[in-house]
Figure 1 (cartoon, rainbow, N blue to C red):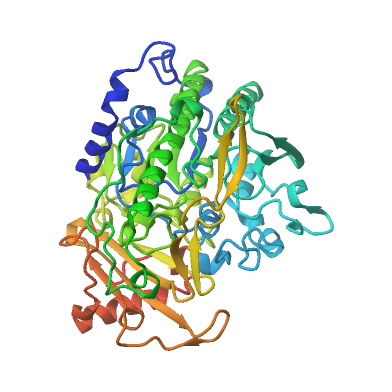
Figure 2 (figure 1 turned 180 degrees about the vertical axis):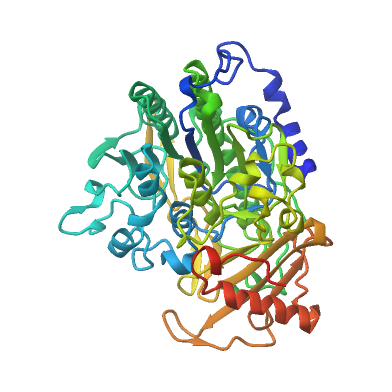
Length: 563
């Protein structure tokens, strides 16, 4: 675990050394404690598509300095599903996909559907935080279909007029990530933005809204909960003008399995063709542009730190930094995207700093997105709704000096808050769409005119990358327990003969039938599917655990180490 944090910090050292007085994140006012030590504030910074394993934090020195070095780095944090809307739904509710119901990015798949708003949203984290006395703000990308016609509560508040329950202030993006030419729902009123960097670049706009909220909350003298969801590093991968040269000359990491088709993986993956030179150049450009977009997020982190430090609130504020899921760039020949079961797509950065959190610590405990909402409400109110699936890891944050040691049996042997056993696995679920989907065909590229204004002009400029398919539907158990020498993943697949058709038995002579199993202790980049070499007893044990988890509900059923 220390090696990962050290690598992330080394990548950021040139920027840490060059901070100058007055620059964002440079040494600012003396950190002070909040007056009266009221309940702590909580900030979530959620990026879009930011990977952990492909050096995405290399140009985020403020994040490293002000959050990672001052808090805990979770080295094995997982998205429970590697695609935007289902993953965000788990983050917002503390529930697995099979319980919150948002299976994909479509309204038909319950992404921001009226049913989701009526039945699920009403029990989300924001509702509970508001009941606990917190002043709340959501700013940025919400769910992919938020603001679409006939979403929200039809007949009452539809489209951008709909403000989900629990949010005192609402500043949400309509639809999917964009950087220019977008619409914001400003407390239910459409606010349209154009193509001026100074006025409209979305990450900066969100940063300014966040700073204003901090000031407003200070004036109200009440604790606040703020969720900032940036478009970075999602397509169309548009850096701010000053960051367009970020990572110049760099290429996406040539990891094991880079541009190597996996012949013993499930259908969507094994039927990919290796990238040609044009696609390789495109993948490398996307890598560089993604890093550029994240520099603006780093500025927001620095600005928040400086504003909160000046008001004496930084020491009384938890900041959680994570991404909705990871991303691949050439692994297994897949040029770019997410949606796959491999660590590039499901592992995410997770840094947490705040009152009582040990500085510079690392934790190998496998936490996942369903655990974020329980942790935040536990910090705010001291309890977690029993019908939520995730666990609170507040106790892991507050065990000063022990965070880097805790996992599995170590937690089971603890006392007090640590006496509750922490599970040694994450549940991963994904529901494939259509037959074969090519991602990137509809990406919009922004071009600049002679005056530097941005226009959404070219559609489909990216060469599409195969990324999904009807039988790319899987359920996995991703285990990590260093004390037991376990670091692996086992996946089972669902098979259909046609989109929307009935499930049929998967062919037993293909990975869809015998599954995929990777042991990351001996094979960290998941190059060899060893499912057929698994001992029958081990395979049956993993299948039995998956069977329990795929239908579990609530704190009791969804947690525990079944061996």
